[in-house]
Length: 213
Ligand SMILES: O=C(O)c1ccccc1NCC(=O)[C@H](O)[C@H](O)COP(=O)(O)O
Image (cartoon, rainbow, N blue to C red; front, top):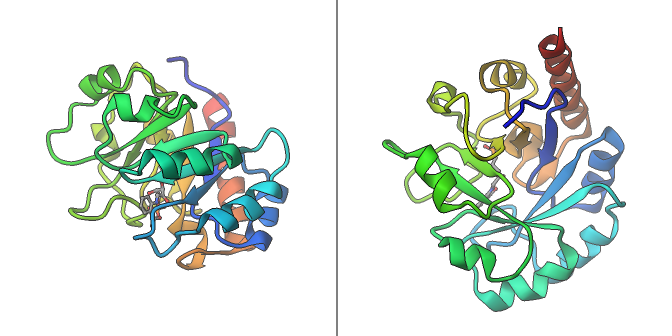
């Protein structure tokens, strides 16, 4: 995959209208909505419809699922541009809704990323996140970025414990297609902070400038 010199930015775990507006105003490329009821950042379908309606064209609305029922995905899909699967979904299950999708992979010991890229060949990208047993995502923890191969058959979305203070080092180390952040731009789970969102964006743009030199 060619390295993009403009790292795309996804802000995840949006629950409040004012945060959606602030994220769009700051310049986020994508916004994530957690549709798994076990999360502190979970929203229901009605909230998804309300928040999604605020998002203008060219900002991608991403729905996060953990081993969802087909009916949940079908009900949410009209409000989404992209599906993000965080559980043990098979490639067939990810394809079933007939919508563009990405697969989140938690970087547990021994994970074969090349093999996963082949298995999930229908994915638009692989989102690489920290592994904590029993927690499907949003851990706020980083992992060893050097485990990511320089060349993978799918675009990499780097996630896990990113903040305005470490995202520049992450971009320098990995050169991902996109970065994904949730806890690093919050004051509490699901409560985003406009200042931290802006700081994160600025840090990514500074890192991109360094990369293009
Ligand atoms: O945020 C959650 O609670 C969550 C629950 C279940 C699946 C995924 C979840 N979040 C995913 C994300 O927010 C991001 O993809 C990623 O994990 C980044 O989170 P963070 O480490 O907090 O930046």
